[in-house]
Length: 517
Ligand code: GAP
Image (cartoon, rainbow, N blue to C red):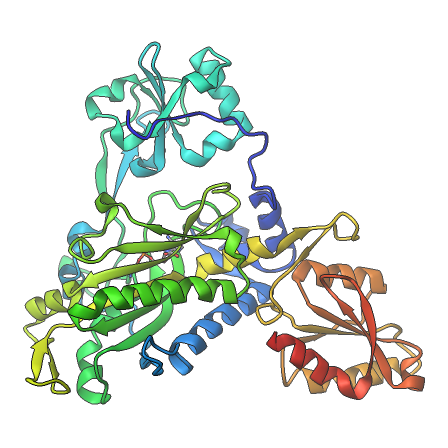
């Protein structure tokens, strides 16, 4: 009964700031994110990014690419780091996934309910134990923050005093006690099966014959595409260890229970960088990247109060990180984890695991020859890997931006950092006459070549402001009946709603300067 805690009923199912229901509704209403195949009833674990969502996602992706590949950080010795980009195939030779360990070990433990046919991830369930009679109730951790679940629990346990029940990880329940367990979606005992391993890789067939010999996998991480190109890059690109290889792209995992909107989906995007260094320097680089990555999330607008670094416990470490200096997660306080945190990015010391495995399985030497020291040395580099979720990053930016404000017609606004905002500026002619559209269009044609600008001439101005508050446009520029006379426009600031008069020929530079902050 280690890690036991009392059940703490909460008044709401949401973080103090925004509920997931509100966020999901806004994402749909304003064109950020839709269910994939929505007209066919959707498909669990898959999402489509709409016009606003793709702009937001690309802004985050481009910022990462810029800060990793175009202008990587300055290293601890004051020299700029060398990081190169790749864009590898999603489907690789299936032997690569045997070598990486994914065919044998990329499994999640699942339990099935024999009655409801529902499937759960054993390590995501908690057991609520009634020590008076040994009765055990299984729930997803976050369900315990739900009023309805707590009501059901009180009824099933026959008590209002939930603090008497103990919550422990479900993995701590021995299979011999499963007979005492009431599953999350039943009232009956003993309906859950013992945990079974379920491989998360999506399989497909390459070629027309579709036999067992033609099986291939959709990549479950972008990282292996980097390791597979390590030799090409060392041999052809005149790099010296330490250096990095970066990649952004889709990854696919047949998650047992995708949930929490885009947080855990079956198709998602990662931004991964493998940093190859001498084994003796792994600790130094691990600390460097941990610090750099947390600061990066702050730089894209995530408040430090909602971020934390969490070192993995020894028993949580992946097979490749066991012998290393560790793994640290950068965690964000998502609405469904609040007041707790959920993983946004992992920084792992993968040792020489991947290169050694690929050397063994491919027969190709992965050693690096270093003649910059005397005597020259040969070694297989160790790897520090900052692996971030782009899709999860978008969710963090959305949750972070959502700001309730009852004083506005929209009741809220999206406080994106201006450089991350999908639309940077809106050009709004107050009237569709008196020469205002002509001035507005001229300004729009010029601004849209510099940054994402919308021309919005429909509806009353209050409604237009409200929509731009909802999509997080930091600057609204209104061309009014005074503009033809004074050659000035009104700029409205999203966060304060303050308005300022700025000369028409200065407004573009004004916005550009503000976007740099
Ligand atoms: N190469 C190491 C690796 O893939 P990971 O912790 O499994 O490590 C890295 O994944 C990041 O990818 C996570 O921190 C998370 O942001 C994102 N991620 C992982 N699984 C995901 C899923 N099912 N849906 C959305 N994002 C996911």
